[in-house]
Image (cartoon, rainbow, N blue to C red; front, side):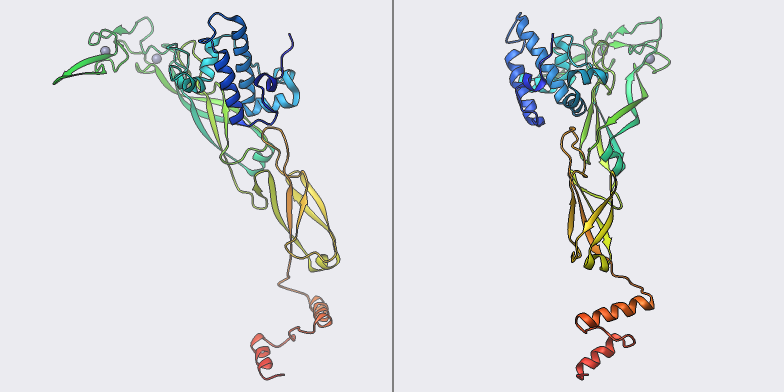
Length: 374
Ligand SMILES: [Zn+2]
Ligand SMILES: [Zn+2]
């Protein structure tokens, strides 16, 4: 069966931004939602199709691959979009369904009271200017709390089982009578878990969780900038058994560059130009982030003039579009000159307006001369 175009599925234009996508997805998800279409396999198929389209298009990296190479491209890159069952969709887009259907899902995901999905994590990544421009695969280490593998999260030593808490009878909460109020609080004996571990697992000391470090490779697309966030699905903390992992949100910060400055997708820089070049014109070598280019400066170019190198800016982070590089030429005024140079400049000055300081006389003397009409 041939797959439909994702943009067509969501009925959005190719350049739809995140807001438009989310809105379109919400609308269609409401329409085909299983709560509204019980036992309707056609609606279920539509619901899955819409979920898959949104999964890809809402992910910058996958969208870029899809835009360039289509469905085959995604497969080629090892992405396998789509959902086997509805619970998957709920846990992926818990946030969105959470606010459509008034909670029940939310970040905890897993649909309705199912196993809890792992926590989302944030990672701050600092990139060099060029890494952000060209994109980079970054290996990172993310500290996280994960279920203890030894006891599989129960906290009990192998061969023993956690026992039902006798204080709360396994409910995890107790009711306290205070004056006229009955207050529910977490059970002080088991801490709300409903079970107590009498023979704790040596690895996690009965907590059921352990501080671990995961090594992930984050694919940073070309064109990212400070303040952007990459969402890496399934790279957060482990959830309950059968529940998906949380997501990793990678927040980007880009270091400054000593020569280039960035303004969105455009790049700015300043290059020096000699006085002779400004007068007579010539070729100036200009570095770009993609290598050196040469700019032809016409005769009579004033200092501060800006030239634009089209298409030498930053690539769009979604794989579309590219900015320009703006080059400002600045006339260099030499602080030191050879005798010969000085003589030539002096002659030039006298030729053009005659108002050149004499070689020996310092400023105050010239000033005095002027005062006395010399
Ligand atoms: Zn353990
Ligand atoms: Zn208890």
